[in-house]
Length: 404
Ligand code: EPS
Image (cartoon, rainbow, N blue to C red; front, side, top):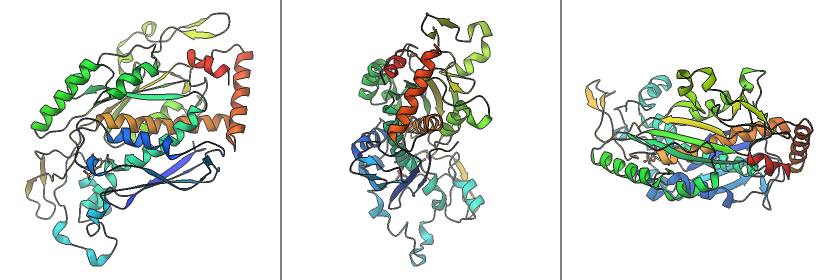
């Protein structure tokens, strides 16, 4: 791994969040308008808390872009926290501002609070929660938007939708998925669910849980179309694309499970009802099913990539959970501070972003290039090679790539 890499920095109530991305080719057209709409999508969703009324997440470029194109140098992204002026003393880097009276000592079960203070030897849980907060996903969405722009140059498109929110399950989406049609319904839904009737039930479910002072998790499905055959590799464990995608999605705060295609359901099926049988129409190989979710042997097989991820309920529960005060060791309810009731819809946008990063990395690993022109040229020559070998290159997305 590692043609493309990035690090993020920033605390939830510090001045802002930043990321440095390295390894992008020069000449990729890039503007704030490629990133800000995704930041806005991440802030949405029924069930978000008060913080999202304060923030208007907007990216700034601090290096790596000039006159609307990447330079091939490290790209620095910056997103200010609009809430920061309310936290200057509490988040001050100066020792003189230390105030023991505002320290948090009742850890939330399910959050990093207890393990973090033990491991890092801190007395204030805020020293841990500031960085473990899902606020960090803001800048990861910005990184993903840059990667998504790169992928769009090759006809690759990514969309997430909510398939489960708490007790409410959405009907399955057809394996013959048309992302444009799906996108219309998903973006119109306050919970990013493709089925309008289920979406309305999910909203009601959230409202009920707000009333009960509780939180909700769910399941996200992330679909990617337009991928060429052969990203990733079967030859080494850390080059397998399913391994890289699983690691990336599990790195997102609160994710607890991942599956590809039929995933866990395959465990109960026979082999004869599991695998995507291979056909040939005289010009291309094709499949009638996509149970593998677009990956065979750790490589893309030209079918849509279908990843499902389970998110646990947010651990900041308003009614409190059994905990222990770290100062007194007395039994006590966990601390509640402003939070979301559910961030499942927003999590889909974050998962799109982390998958976009892995796919952009895999594209650069396969096609290389210091400039976008060079990457395109290597990509075209691979498509030509596949064509000559009469190798299947995907469904309708493969046809788009032909004209490349
Ligand atoms: C978040 C901002 C945070 C939380 C949420 C995600 O803001 P604040 O802590 O000021 O309310 O709303 O964080 C968590 C869910 C978490 O577990 O920490 C955001 O921008 O997404």
